Image (cartoon, rainbow, N blue to C red; front, side, top):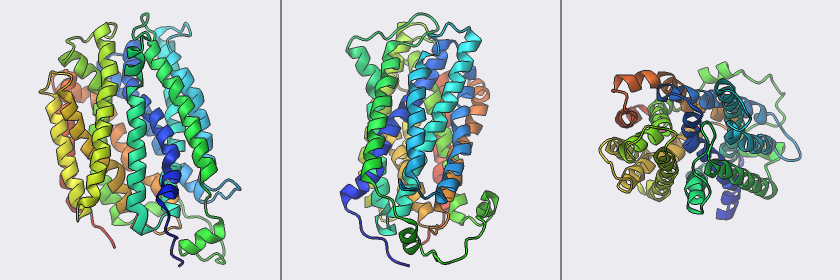
Length: 434
């Protein structure tokens, strides 16, 4: 097997740069979906149900993107065609989703339109997102993977930072932050429009700058015999049965982590509107102001994540870094319950960003180092199930959990903190390979 060439910093940067634009789209979705559906009239106890669709679509789409891109060779590459197509669909849907209340639909019609748009948006974002993880697995040596995923983590958080603050900035510039009942404020609409424009520019940059390995070169670098008679590709169930133990043990950690963040995305708007602005009325100016502040808090989380991403490589043991990061994040989640000042919440979300940094980089480093190159795309797609399944379970149970903890949305942050502690304890079961 030929060793992969060492790539320069800018080559590693170019591989992941498009992720900056994709993450802007994803962060706009994460920070505004609950706000959009609550503004359209959804009940707080049913909000989590709207969050079932995004991970469900990711669970379906990403393994398929991995499987078929493993066997795709075009003049444009094997992963990039999927990246480009997903981005084009995302751009179209980003212009439609925030207008769900503007088409003279009934309440039910607006909800159905919003759900279909959300389903298409998350499908396309997942289709655009997965190839970036695969490009690192395809083109980067084991020695540089940690650095490559750290760059990817930085770009993800930088994109998140930009997307999260858009509504707040537009309100600051004087754009309307309230709208007639059942309609979405212009601050949110313009955020999605600008995010769509940045997404296509970033994806075009990666498409033009990155040249994927042709089949023969790929085979040499991944120890695949190019003269071997092509056999029928094993099915996903067969590959799951043969998956390394790292796949399953890291997946257990992922289950608790992503369930925790699903509750953060779902309930932050309602929680801080109640505890900081003293309102639960979605039509009030206070609720919409809280919605903008959610973007600022998520941006602070991204800053914390970027800073902590620089610290993670300093740990001698990557598992220790994983545990420490998740425990710090648990403290951040729990502290939201006790803080009623909008600025003191910066501390909470900086700590939450520590856990987010580890979740973006450590699992993929552990997994890709335990895989051969032959089915890496399919395995990364399947591994996305460890991100999507916990979100689906958490979303399906969200209304019941909210009722069990008393109905106050801020109580869900205690639940999220407990989940991260369980995730940290689960790291014990992860076995690493050289």
